Length: 362
Ligand code: SIN
Image (cartoon, rainbow, N blue to C red; front, side, top):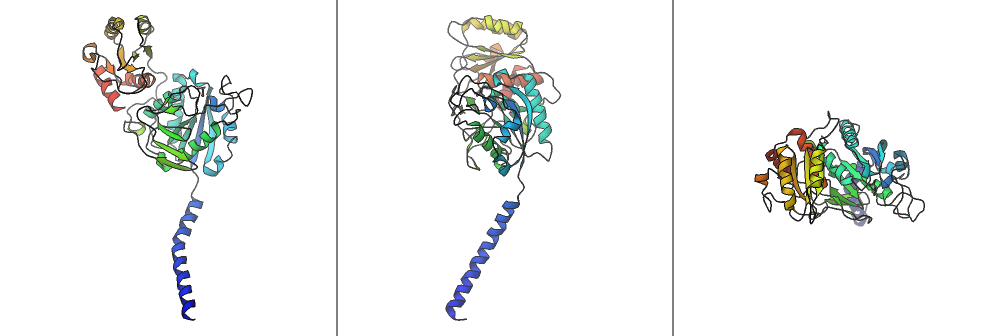
């Protein structure tokens, strides 16, 4: 062998040596088992149907069953072992405590099995943030739970449901999603259940975490997280609904100019155990309501001050004397999320000091 031939031979051996470990990694990736993902369907626009390809408002929600949703995205089979279950078939404005309890119990049951790696819940967008936050507080597992919806019915041109579902399954099957609480995935964006809110009645880019921002983004099959939730959730949460068949009644009373006490009194009379006030500004309350709050407190009704503004903190003792009234400041939870935390808190205690601590923890 002359010198040049020998050098060429040596270089080839060197590169083969380098390639060997890469080939091993590729083979490992190719043989890595697909995650087992369960899709729990509840209805909503993602399962909706219109009368024409251009109809994006006024269609019928909750028409297609879970098997139809899965069949519409055959690519799911490349990324996960997917199976479906129909938990409900409703437009999400009709969501009930009964469906929430059924869903939470089923999620806990499924995640306890070693045969389930993650869960995707298909849901209408109207109350999606509420279901996601409820589950964030009562699911007892670190495995990924992803809530997904769509803004356009499946029959429309450029329906967003199929791609949202695909990405939700990618997310639920990813190691990165574990331990981050319940996640909401629409429009390629990952948001935390606690922070996210629907902000636009019709836009595809409607789910935002006002003042806080999204947790991450999905492109193709790549999941990228940039932040993580800091408040307690899922396996670290103290709330347990496994044995419950109902939740305490909590109503929301809205704050506005020239307000009066009628709605607040009606809520107490109807048996509310708690009331969330969607106040003006920093959770401010019209002076006409103050005697009604005192009366409600005397009856043991727990009162939380939230804000109708949509972002920012309601500070304890800001413009309102929470200590004297025995009321609770809702931190930065919007009224519908504050309602959920108060419902769960009331299962444990009706002591305002303890409930205030819960609002700062969750
Ligand atoms: C619903 O919330 O069920 C209807 C609206 C939607 O899903 O976008």
